[in-house]
Each structure stands twice: as C-alpha cells, then as structure tokens.
Length: 159
Image (cartoon, rainbow, N blue to C red; front, side, top):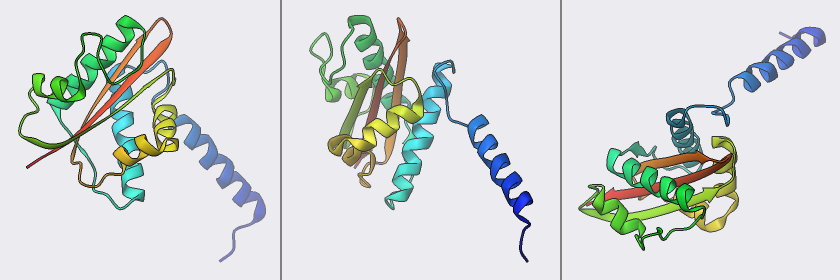
C-alpha cells in the first residue's frame, strides 16, 4: 500500500513537530528533569554501543550534584574540587563504597541535557566513559548559576 504524497508530507511534518515538542530538558527545566534527561540520553548512547542501561545510584548522584555545586560556586570546570577533592573521595564520602570502577565526566556551559551529552560523545575520553559497558551505575549533577550550567556524570560499578 502506498501513501499519497500529501499525506506523507503531513506525517513527516507532524513527526517533526512532535519531536520538537518532546525535546529533552531545556535550559528552563527543573534540575531533576535535567538530570533525568542526561541519564536517559546517556543510556540511549549506551544502547547504540551494545551496553546495558546504567542504573541511577543515589550516592553517585549526591557526589555528582555536590561537585557541580562546587564548580558553580567557584566558577570552574574540572575533576579536582575546590577543596582538593577527587572523584574517588567524593564518591566514597557520599557512600559509594566497595566499588571496583569509577569514572567521571564534567562539563560547563551547555544549556540542555542533549547539548551536554552530545559534547561528551564528541570527546573521545568522555565518550569512552559513557560507552564503557563494565560501568553499571550513574549519578548526575546539574547546577545553573549566573546563566551558566555546570554538569557532572559519575559512573561506577561494584564487585
């Protein structure tokens, strides 16, 4: 069965419109919505690579959120915290103990969840963390301060 050209054009236009209205987390979205969108988009990238979905982990989420807040407060983007904390010390302080692997992605400035995941996927080192199939847990941090977004993804797996 063929679809008339005018109907096909209408279907394409409707699909495009739906895609625009269903776009993941914009800059005006709540922080929890932004974090959830990053996890959803990260898991979509993992699925493309043949990896299982990451499970949200509250301790990693706390570590990531605290690091994003620290970066926002002190206006920097980096893996070492303003107090000298590291990804490992932040994860353990938040209660993620007994781990066998940890990884972290940070970013600053991207206005949407889609933009930050896209940026991470364009960076070989960050992409490697996203599609590392041995990682099983995720926590995401997001803070917006003075119009700038600060992002952290913490990944882990336990023995």
